Length: 296
Image (cartoon, rainbow, N blue to C red):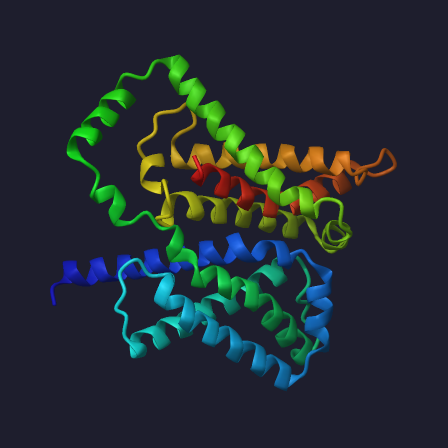
């Protein structure tokens, strides 16, 4: 096997894993901000955890035949079982890291309680991994009519500054809409206050960094619907890094508005508390914003 072919296989594997991670966060982030899941996770025993993981694994095998997380896969039992094991592992790792980031997997929690919380959160994350390929455009872009490709390319090249501004505003609007859909259900809950109260300055920076990285992966690296088109757009902020940062700022503004709307922010609170609340809510809001950008 040549070195180039090996590199191609590794890159394809990386794309599949990034797609799995993106699907995990898109589906699992709402339940990450649900304290009932944390509490249930602290109460389950080893048998409950084993049964939950077994049920999730069986569900992933079933989902692999209709979706899964790989773009190119072979529908044979042995491969499906191995892929489902990988999907479950990705879900567990994403759930554990997410709980650690928001401060609800402290080292003094106890091993059984830690495993319980990870197991409960891994269920929705696993479902997200299992359906992630359902969102992949994949070969559709390659099968596009050549004449339509040329027409679209000419249209992009002929865009005026006004057209670029319009495209940027559409992106911002889609980001805001996606952020509102996710943040609206989370903003009025006590989870925001609990999570924010556990964060240090370093913790807030980590949440910001993870929000940016996950948003970037969802839109530009996971091969989801419209991802290939986004790389060709010519808006004002259409460079992947600039668009990610700009969209994150939009998500933070949406988070600020949601927190103000539900009276979470008060004049008796410090600006540091405000900042913590906004950035904590900005994590799920930015993921919703990324999903919104994929929808256009």
